[in-house]
Image 1 (cartoon, one colour):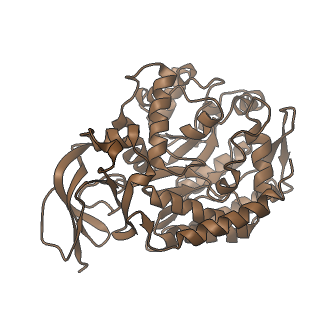
Image 2: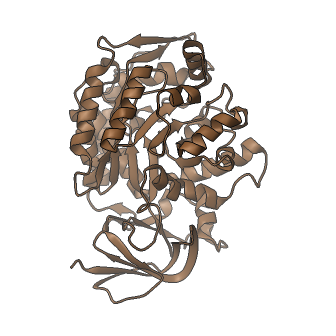
Length: 466
């Protein structure tokens, strides 16, 4: 029988009666990879003293791109381009096309470490290896997934496929170009990859079907994705609602809204996630989505994965995730790009929502925290993640409450959402194993990862052609 670990004396955010509830100086008992009890003491072979710390469930980052993000930060945020998302259609593809497989892995390692050190225990990685070549070679995606679990993360690997790609010019015009085989070889390789690796590495590595973007996949490809999901049990995440241009493209080519088009493809369902979901109407106001279309999302159990900070950097924001919640739509949270700090992303979500609705009461810290924990777990169909409760996976984060900026807060959730950041994370446990202690990773040399990344960045930047 595995040794028991007792985490004692912390402020514990326990999952009780359908909500996170604060227990003062409480104990969490872990045995193997599962939580045995929360709030009840018991003898244990090992102890972790959590005095002065909050003990909370690990964060679930539902949408990330770790192979390219390290190369875009410091470059993409203020690059010039057309108002209608020139970065998305012109600059970003140029950066991605300059990254080779070796440098993609170097960037991924550093970004995955950043996620882990700031409290993420489960991450969805939407690969984009060899984007413009439409390659069916998935060795790079496999290596990135193995890097993630090797560092100690729980990872959902989602290599993407599509019929073709888009590219924007300097005037803001977006062109669409098909691959020679309509992306079929890539799709078949991604499906085979997902089937082969799902549940491997003692269950730490799972996979997800990921058609690229709603406007780069035809109806047949999306419908086939739904059929494969039904046969395999694999979840689906699709980029949709990224820009007004995308919405107009679907409307003009398909004669219907994005939500109706996804319904027509059969995608909507409890295993389906919409990455971004910001422009499911031509504006970023969720209130302009027809009520019957919101009901389609809610009734089907479809989740929207909200990615606030990347859009706020571009000068816009969703109005708002709380409107989705009020319509009964599940909303999860992801970082998309950088920083890979879910505490930072919770703040962006909460403050962005309040600004969009021009109301301090538009949302709460607890709602933002739920997006980063239990609602992400719900999107994955996992009731064993995102909460501290008996029989859940032992994915646990301990954050300091002793720093000056934490003084005066009685509620750790309010502190983290409104005043904390990833640097508050002291200890991270995934699947019952401590993989971060004292704010440092136990399975990697952080200084070496940073040095390798700086060398790789210089190589990639030299190859970018706009």
